[in-house]
Image (cartoon, rainbow, N blue to C red; front, side, top):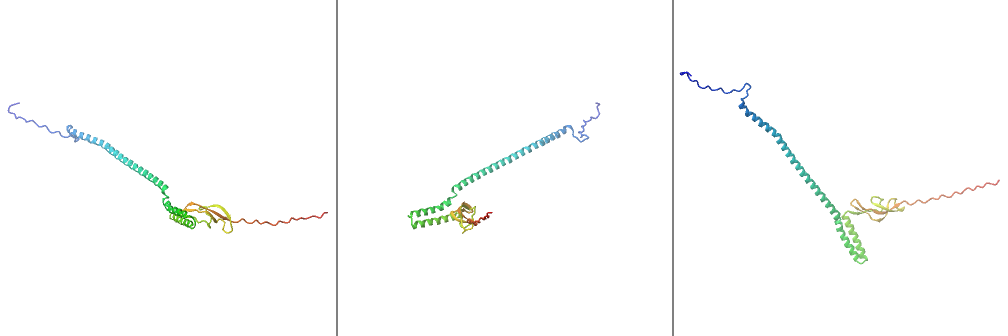
Length: 218
């Protein structure tokens, strides 16, 4: 260096400019690549998280349905047991009301028998019959009025046929045993005798005289 010449200060290097395509230098582009990788990882994890949430939701729904099914089965079983118990009680105690009414009939019959006979016995038996009829009426038990009615196989049971001109054929002329109805259901048919037309008298035709033609001897 020659004395007296001005000293040149160190020139500053120009900052690196972006490339022609606008890309940043290599040392500045690296963070962007890392960011893209993280986003790609998050996108890959999101479907798995959604599937796990969906599976958990379906399992919860399945558990709810199982619980509801078990409750429904329990209710059906309880209803079946209750119905069975009510059926047994109805079968065992269904006649309790009728039996309670018949207790009075039994009491009156016992009093009639204790009367020792005579008019007291007859009066007591008549009282028993009246009270029994009242008990039947309270429980909708009705006697079948059969005599004089047309024979009905739904209510009557024919025991015999009777030839008579006093009643139309097929009419009930005698009741052997009364029948009864409970509401509109047959408890017991009435045993009856049924009229039939009398047999027609056989008309005997007059015997025709046989011709006894005699031929004159030749």
